Amino acid sequence: MIARLFLAYFLLAVFPASPGASAHGAADRWTDKEMGRSPGGPKGIALRAPLPAAGRPENALCKGESSKCTFQLTYFLGDGFDLARKQRLNILFIPGGPGAIVDSGNRSVVLQELERRHNVVYFHPRGMGRSVIDGGKEYDRFLRADYVVEDIERLRQEVLKTRPWDAIYAHSWGTVVAQRYAARFGRPKGAPPKVMSLVLSGPVDRHRADTQGARSRMIVENLKMIFDYYRSPAAAHCQCESSTFLRTLVTDFSTPQISPRDNRLEPTDNFCFMKSDVADNVLKRLEKVISEIDENYGSADLIVDNFDRLEQDKEFNQRFQKLPVEFFAAVRYLQMSGAPVNDGLVFVADSRNRINAALLIAHYLTAADGNRCSPKEVLFQAAAAECDYCARLKVAIQEQRASIGGRGESLRASYVFGIYDGVTRWAPQMMGEKGCFSGRDLAKFADGSGSDKRFGRDQVRRVGIVAEEKICPWNPADYRHEVPALLLKGSRDAVVAGCQAEDFYQNGVGKGRAVLLEFRGLGHDLSVGNLSFGAEASIWSKRFAGLLEDFVKMSSSPEKFRSSAEIKEKLRQLKVSDRSGEAKLTASCAKNS
Image (tube, rainbow, N blue to C red):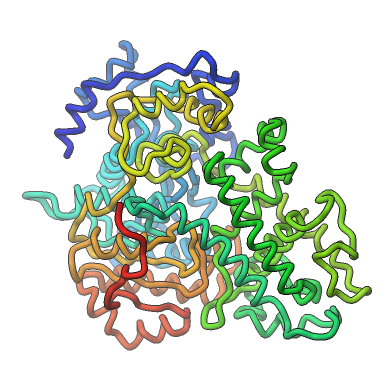
């Protein structure tokens, strides 16, 4: 595999941006903001690392400047890190995105819980945060998961010397990197393994033909489940006198909750005001809007990230009738948040945010004027006069708006890693590509003319395009290995809908070496892990962290982990299904592409 990559790189050629590109899309350099570079936050420890391995032909880009061929790989050590304490496991965390920026000053409660007993190492993957590389688009060719694999091995040698990682804990896109690292260093010929186990949260697998369609369908299904779950039994007239009914629906009504914010449920969080025919109409309209988003803009994520430009675009406004950014952010949230189920964990914070998103979507798809709210509008026709749902809507808009810009991330990494590692769906979707294609095809799409998919072409022009590089949907089976792996997914995770985690489990890890656990009702963020940084650890988060720790310690025998009575009790408490031994695991999924 590596030899083929070396040969391919001899043929690399960068296509310049199209002369017809917009001023924003035609820029030859990424800005500091787009790379996720900011002056604040912890500084970390800098390790000088080469962009490509010595002797690769890409070094011609350095033009005699040795500093151009290296970058500062920045890493961070968790609290209490102490290699002298042999009982502490050595764990590397790889964030998702691609482009998410996480370090020891900005991590989840579960990671903090792991730090209490173990050595946790964080890093900013190349091209983002404090591990930024040259901003010229020609340097985008150095942003690939395979290069991050080399960075991780260099980091292991620097921090652990001769010891292996006891575990690599990775989320979403991070599972792509972890899988490649395990395939290359898990059982290297003539040498001891460099990693002993993997914990893969929200593992992605894009090789199936309809994961995009599966995601879209699950978003609509999640909305329906929210409408149904947070709705008291039908009554002659919807009252708003008490939130007692809603309290019975959540797991963590008493403190400490999953979020430190004041996310209490109130009487107006009850969807009793919505008639069934109105709900059905909202679902049908949302399905149509998502189809328009997928076909013409790739994803709600892309719209939210570029809304300041799109709201000035006549074609965009005509297509979506001036729907505001909060609407698209709500759609984006539904693909991440999961949906409530009776036999799953349902948290107060999740509930509040789900209700916000559902209320916004329902309002904007039914109101005659989305900028105004009236108690007489069709959405609230079954509500009692004294129920001020317009006030609740106003709060939902404010809370949704506040969450839009709060993610620390690198846009450059999202675009470049996303496309070339085969995990981003927006570019292939707009190109009409369902399988592998080349950088030349990417350039051809970017250089197209006419108004059709103009926005998508503008986004592709932002990326340094390598003509001869082959780009394929990510398939972990191409990097199958024997390293024990714990795979974690939410049953209502739209990001990995279409049996991606199931495929990863069956085809990416040796038989009997993997365990697949499904958290009922949770989404891609697996909120049981307290993804709200700085939160107080809840009992569920502690159990979750303990479960990960148990697997790492027992990873030499995944079957022993599965059969343990203590583990089974933790799974029961966390509302988790062990799907590892399930017959016909992917029988209900779409045909492989």
